[in-house]
Length: 392
Image 1 (tube, rainbow, N blue to C red):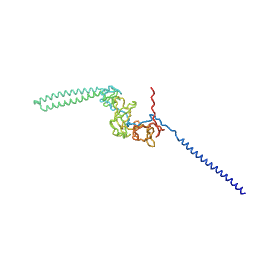
Image 2: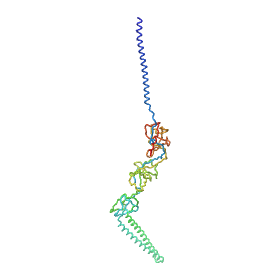
Image 3: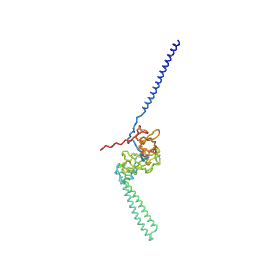
Image 4: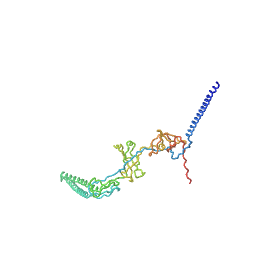
């Protein structure tokens, strides 16, 4: 009975050991499989991150620029209206009817040329009357001289008294004074007659005709307006902060609409001593040489006045300047690779296409001037060879 009981207990024990062995084997296989999957995943990730080797990027000649010396300047923009520097309004100096006007608007006239005539019949009669009065005064003077000389001889011979001679001398002096008065009145009448013929006071072009033949005019009545276009004046406002750099005699280049790229030379002649109350700007007055009379009064002109001009400085194209996290830099080409170089910038050229590099680059250094996002610090580059010329 004891033997049978022992064999029954041993069977379940062997079954448990077998199950535990199977479980252990499965756990080992599961662990090995997991480790293999992890290693496999890392290998795949490494393969995905790996990039095939890339050769140097070929750059065109236009993509590269060299640091060059350029002269930089600071300029003041100018704009304003052109007005004739010399102009005159011709007015009548006498009263009378206008007989004729010999010029019209746009006609060129010379200094002293006859422009108009005013009826001088009354003035002529007055002039003749003054001439007659002058002749009478001269005759009276001659008679007074004869009487004085005669009385002087009679006084020497004691035939007349001193009082009688003094009366003859006074009559002579009065006659001489009358001659001077008559001469002055005759000159006034002659001037009036001359003023009836209106002449051009300056050389220029008639800009306005304000009277017609047959109209009656009085002294100071405007007749014609004449402008001299050989020199014009440009009145241009400038910021008060720029005035310390403006000097008399500085030259500006101005352009006027309708004349293409033609530039006219303007010279600073005067500077207003006070600011404008509304804009707080100060007016500059520049003379514009217009010897060929190409420009006209009232035209609008724009230009620039060179305030400062520096010595040649290292410059690069503005397209070569890059910025990252507030740091300004360029990508210089060194031994076939792009190298990041921090730079300190200064002034720009007039058209802002070039900028001064005060620190960071030497003259002659090649830099990347094209915005190519794929190229970064350390990238290998090469310059494209120029294509061969076609065979003749």
